[in-house]
Length: 113
Image (cartoon, rainbow, N blue to C red):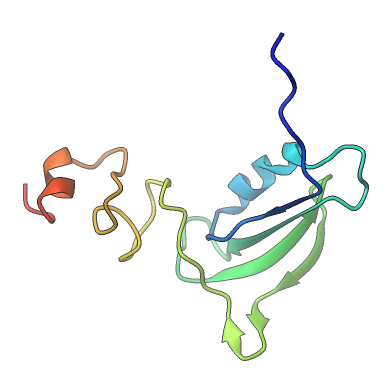
């Protein structure tokens, strides 16, 4: 059988994600460390990439801390470019990545089919 996946005491996202994706990473938190945490800038609404909240989760998925504003700054991060709902200049086709449903020609030729 393959070896078990590695586990971590802390997982920190540096790009915006939907809550579902953040929660899917909890299985990689160390089961032997009760203080293992995941910190992510989570979209305030599913697939809304224009505003996030910092959310810290315990291994069980309990929210242990959250913040919408840090100092005078609202939380806004680059979107998860792997999501087909990604929008804005960080996202396909502007960043060179290809959305799963994007025509190859539009990516390679600056939006022109």
